[in-house]
Image 1 (cartoon, rainbow over the protein chains, first blue to last red):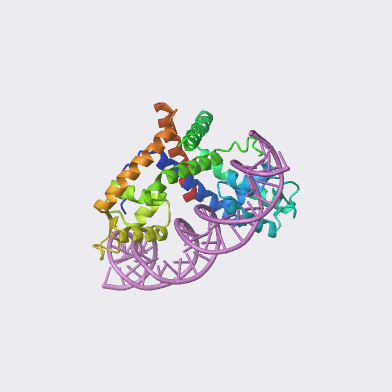
Image 2 (tube, helix red, strand yellow):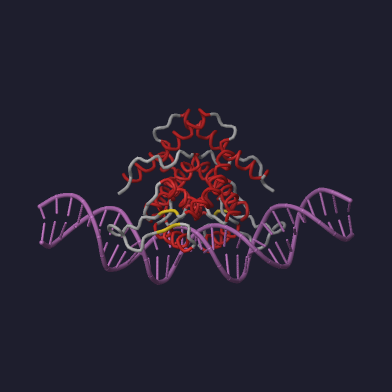
Length: 150
Length: 150
DNA sequence: CTCTTCGTGTCAGCTTTCTGACACAGGTCA
DNA sequence: TGACCTGTGTCAGAAAGCTGACACGAAGAG
């Protein structure tokens, strides 16, 4: 193999992508035994924290398009994890809610995901963690602003 | 809209995913005019820094499977951006190299991507940047270790 | 030398996600 | 009131990525 310690890149962007990739893999690994994907879990978690979210809002929260979230929601609804009214109470927005089954399913997943997050933060002090939080928010803010301005 | 400042999640994992998503969008935006995707760019950049990488090594560096990288390489080869020997000089490994055309194409892309990275780091001190670097590496290391151990 | 293990390139099929497009609801403003 | 713009849900097609599987070469263990 050719894994000499070449410094590949000193780029923070590359490192961010790598971290995200490793995190995603770790989450997939613990969610697979539960028959759940990352987007699947994200959707349920969002609904638990903010009941009644619409399809589009869920999509934004899970960082996918509303079309993708829509197919996921249709599956979740068919399998009885979430409920959507047949008719929109106002406008076209269909507020989605967890069913008891969805809530139970989410509980197991939350435990699994939390263990991954704990593992990720191992070896970091409280100060470092809040520093990481602030730094990531700064990156997001800077990119979003520039994005709108460009 | 329903964008009250609900604290959605205090999770570093969520924030990491968000940052990665925003970064990806920003990169896609500046690469699209050049007819290039993020994976496409990653592949070329890796080859510039480490000429002769194999398909599998490129896949690992770009965080995709070798199968995905293989179809990308076939396209890049057909369009004249990279070259691979018809026969493996040793084993089955086909070392890939940039053509002059690939190098020219990469130069423009590098400028575009660097501008995104500069924008991302705007408002961060040198100290914060090196702190971010260390923190991200710590996360990656912790997740990788646990991954192997699990 | 033989066997086992590991990494590699590649074929096939499938899943997920995305882009493009349409009609409709609600708010704003003249 | 009517025009305009934004956000939404949804349909259809295409692109990108993944899993599973196979055969082959290299390297190490016995």
